Length: 275
Ligand code: MF3
Ligand code: CO
Ligand code: CO
Image 1 (spheres, protein in one colour):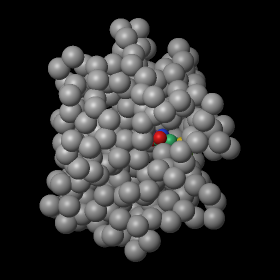
Image 2: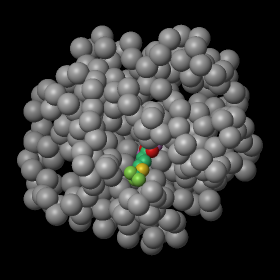
Image 3: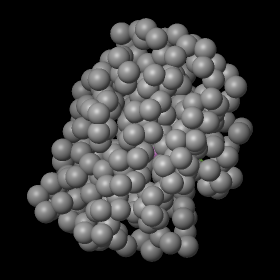
Image 4: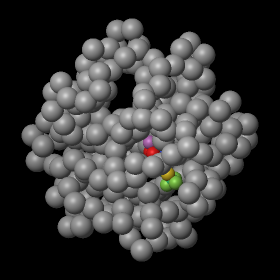
């Protein structure tokens, strides 16, 4: 979500960070798993020549066939099930008839609603053979997300998560996008708090058991600045450098973190999904 968009889901967002119980964990496990299975399903379809619209259709049919709802369809006027962000597109790429090409990298982001609970996840896909620099960016982004997730346990802060991501990503000579962030989620799609992917240790709210949120860093090979195109959605790097993103939905447990959107088949990051 956009860090500028503080009134997102405004009717439901109180500013307080919700604490969920066992029923919430159960609900999020189901929603998260289906979202992950949707991204698993797409892997063999992400090939040169396929349109992103076709991938969107496959995702929509998969979600509906499993008795769930696509959260993005109709969300603030967005009319698709997934966002597909290729190459220098940072996030919120709109599926279209344009075909994917050999060497593209693409993020596919899906959010499903199961029994009212939201499962929100995205991964990177390589289209055919991908250049070493694109592959390195994807690996850095994944590892950045993983380090953010590893900082999650009661007593740590949201600043600890952001710092872990930023420190690693910048040490790899890449940059963290500032204009979009992760978010609380549960029965609300974009709930409090904003989860920044940069920050300082010890700053921000303290993590407590039962908090649910996403970690979804966007990482650029070049500078961090982005702009949103005139369609009102597509965010791109200002310097046209390559950008990548990974997203998990998770919950804080008594002693760490539970990932709700892990791939049951272990396909989240075999370097690049599908390879
Ligand atoms: N799934 C995105 C996120 O991670 C939200 C996309 S909103 C849409 O928060 F409307 F663009 F689909
Ligand atoms: Co999200
Ligand atoms: Co998402």
